[in-house]
Length: 509
Image (cartoon, rainbow, N blue to C red; front, side, top):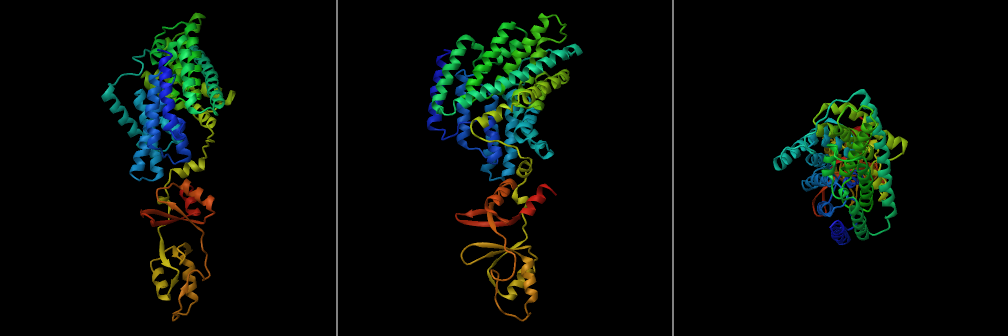
């Protein structure tokens, strides 16, 4: 069964990605980060279904993957699809993606606060009051619903954690360093497998992953599946040192093969598994060396889990919050802070590794970047920055019509020219021209010919964000954007004018 289950799941996954994926091969948290960076958080129903059934097949088939990554993707894409269905602006869709991310983490671990921190730290990459409020509400509602269905039970049972002595902090620091080293090895292994198998079609990678995981499962069956039963045993100090080392290596190798070959599962669960084995192994070695370990083994197992999460995912605040909520003990905060910081610094500064999510994106050919200016622009919709003070006029006006148009004090004139195009003129230029005309003049005014500034126009949709607007400015060398929305096939209603100055004022008032 350890061989047949992964192979059967591999066949179904290969069929699904071969004929149904249509080029969608990267899922999970990495996919959400890519959609947020380049597609304004817009996900598709196809991706949702691929993740749901793909992750279910992978976990049932015994692949060494977690459920939290798929939960995050399903929650985030649910928020995205809801926003698209309601025709909400893109900056609101991004907020709904963060809400879904927090809900996925909160429902997975029964840790609402960790869900909020993870959504803001990893997906949104920002901390603002406007972001906090909806994300907190989403995490609370998801946790409440999860508790109604599955009851309010701790993730790993009741943990008995004592206080940490100053002597124990040395061991905590050792756990942090080792977790950083193992995190770097984990990230490098995923990167190596993903890069080496990049040219192999996805429908061949699935059977290869199934065969390799099945082979590892024959020797170390505990590494198959999510593995939280083994984590609970490690928390209770039930494993010997040799078995802990074997489980750590086996899980790292099996997960690297699965994730690197593109199996649609998560990496958070495996990272916690590896960290648990590492923490338990260090604690057992400390007791064997008679260094006077004061805290229980379970405390160091939990610290190993948090340190590994911080080192491999580069989410120290989320890891610290998760440890606090899983243990329900403030005593874990002090050693937890030391563990996550040391692990993160070791992985990034000593070995130069990015997070697993960024590594997977870059291995698939996506050059992910987090530009701080773009992050600020993504939070603002064009509707909140556009100038509504404009008048739509024909190209030929009489003097009386021109005076009547200017009575309302528009800032811009949107001119419909005979060839079906449009151009934009500052209204003050028409007012200046009227001053040099004789009052009794009845000559028609040609707005295409009078001395005036005429701004190069490009269209932008009403639901777009200011980041999209800035990209349109750059792509079309436009001086102003026409904010519009289609009200009927081929018919657009113009809502306002957006200039480069208004974009800059929006994020740098």
